[in-house]
Amino acid sequence: MKIVEVRGIPLRGRIQEAGWEDDIAREDNMQTIIEIVTDEGLRGYGSSYTSLALVEGSLRLLRRWIVGQTAIEPERISETLHQKTFWQGRGGAVTHTISGVDIALWDLFGKITGQPVARLLGGYYRDRIKPYGSILFDEPDKLRDKLLAVKGRGFRAIKIGWGPFGRVNSKLDELLVRTARETVGPDVELMIDAGASDEFWPHSLKWALETARMLADYDITWFEEALPPDDIDDFVKLRELSPVRISGGEVLTRRQSYIPWMERRAFDIVQPDCIKVGGLSEARRIGWMANDHQILLVPHGWNNAVGLAADLHLVAAMPIAGWVEYLTPSQFIEDILVTPFQLDADGMLPIPTGPGLGIELDMQALERIAHLS
Image (cartoon, rainbow, N blue to C red; front, side, top):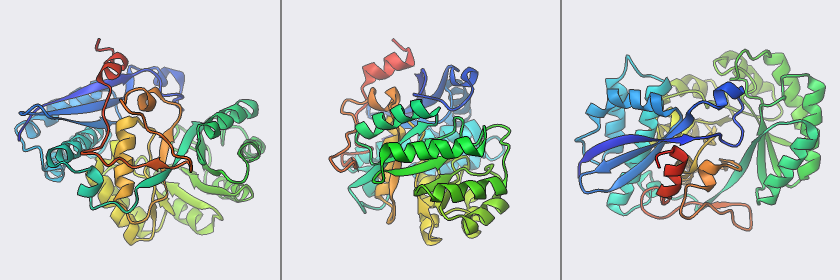
């Protein structure tokens, strides 16, 4: 079975809240679904964390090494794409596009063989996982309302990030965290994301360490992106001294870039993003590397339904995993599936068991969002 077509389908409109300035958030689109079609009409779907314009530009470069290939060798094809684009890729839009291609190839591989992707990645270590509802910080009263809404949807873990946190003063930071803990109570896990990959981040190690100590007083599960994403030396120091677990790695791409972070134990939790890092092929390798270094894998996923499905299959196939990120509410997760994801009574998310990614896209809804009809 051969590949005959590959194309991008844009997700247009805002993802709940963006985290960036409005002029960036209102761009044409921030995520793109990748569709790969075989000569027998079978279709696989992946997701790329970049706009349609950049995906189309990347596909003009990549298409010659995709079309005509067998549809059942995702890792070989993806690695070939990385190798062929050494000088024009190695990160950014090209690698993000390869990520979507790779996920779509795994989806096809599963559909062709009649197997779920998790089994093809190595097998099911678990059949469900705890999702954390992912939201942004806001002023205390609005934050309280957001948290109650997320808790009301059944989430037993919530991550809060960006917004005013780390951008006003430490007194406000503590007020926000205290408000969050008092709102959700002691039985809901809370994670804090400083978002230090934001432009012109003003803080360094001392701020991160002082903040980590404050977070420990509120039983915070982990502290994410507490430092700029290239500051490996200070991440190493912070992880050694922090009373709460330190996480990061969402902006890194390809497995090779994670090696020094693993070897130097810069993270307690590493967070590759399937739709940026190179797809499931790369994320799986990073997951095993993390496992070998006693670092927990928790995939980053400011995401859509296809990306979330990929994350679910990834964590199913990892020996140790605790959570997946679930942006909520989001039309890109909740409105484009024939059968939406559903948390169970324990606040856990079942991992799909059908062929491929185990989800069915609502193509009419997807076309409306893409403005294709």
